[in-house]
Length: 129
Image (spheres, rainbow, N blue to C red):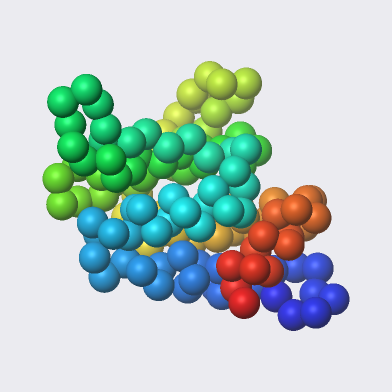
């Protein structure tokens, strides 16, 4: 996203989101931090903490952009990705997808959101700088 550029580069956003994928244990935590910086009001994080649990890391993250909900869930050493279609909080459909496809679709959604919101555009610019 260059100066005066109204449309963010989807591939650049996706590459930034993928950057920390080598360790899936850390990946979700880093992604949660990035997403809450970009659109804190659209992100819901579920932690692994509980009364008898010591693990306070994120167990799942969900980000709603329009009628699409992007969800990542950590189970053991793996992360599962889902994109669902929701209208007024009612889930109409959902698909499990590969992590790369999920990141690419999320990047598209973030780029679309940046064209509609100055706050999202500024947050994406910070993410990409």
